[in-house]
Amino acid sequence: MLADGKILSNLTANQTIHQRFGGVVPELASRDHEKNIVPVVHEALKAAGVDKRQLNAIAFTRGPGLIGSLLVGTSFAKSMALTLNVPIIEVNHMQAHVLAHFIDDPKPAMPFICLTVSGGHTQLVLTSLADADTNVATTETDRKIQMKIIGETFDDAAGEAFDKTAKILGLPYPGGPLIDQYAREGNPLAFNFPHPKIDGLNFSFSGLKTAILYFVRDHIKHDPDFVKKNLNDICASVQHTIVTILLTKLKKAAEEFQINEIAIAGGVSANSGLRKAFVEMGKKENWNTYIPDFQYCTDNAAMIAIAAWFKYLNKDFATQDITPLARYSL
Image (tube, rainbow, N blue to C red; front, side, top):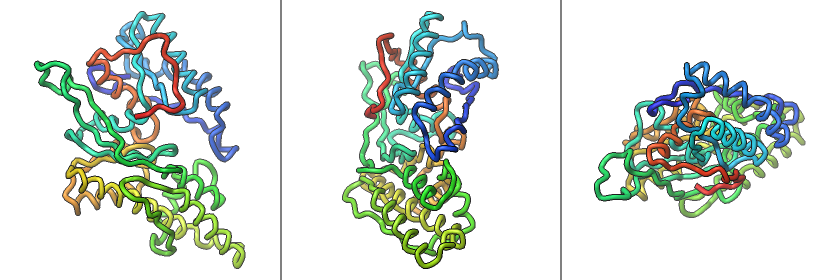
């Protein structure tokens, strides 16, 4: 819930049902969305102290994401908006991750580069203010924010590399946070893993995943308890490798575009190793660094609300014939 650019409430219904399957099951995700959306919206209104009849617009995630879950959210938003006779605002999920930096202070100055890392995406996004539609517009609220992908993964995302590594190590889902937890007690230089040689500002993580798989397989042949004995060091070494790959490209982007306003966002930005290394690199490179509050890193309603706020200021509303998109370009 948001009013005048300020978050009033931010509630999340966690889907623990996927843990028993070792990963997200799309059909179960959409069913859980359908079951929880009404009580979550009710509690969000209650926590914000807002009556639904006071709403001026309703925002929803159009994509990218699982189509079943997106259908639930889109249908609910359209129906509620029709009932209340208010406009709807469609939001790109990945744009919302970038704009999560505008929820709290300090906020990045335009232009800035954002490394957006999640389970499904790894992108370097150049964010700036577009030219005003008229010659008289002078404030930021009169101008639209534009985003350009200047680098992205060719194959797997960084978050997927964390989760697949956890699965290889026999850790329960979701494994990314567990790797972060064990890595804190390990030696990041204990084992060496390959860094992909990708030109430009793009990424690749499929080769790293394969290397980790073969590494574990070969060591288990000689010692069945290898993973158990070395879990902390393996996690620390894998995390160090992924973080180094990410920040090397981020540094290259900052140098190429000569920008020192640098941010990270997305679910993987909650990783303590990445956050620490990012801040340290920022000090070394004389960057102004920005990381959203932990609750705004993983998928959440507040980031959708703040992204919608910018559209609301520009009266950028959607129509009732809009449909969700599993793939939705930034």
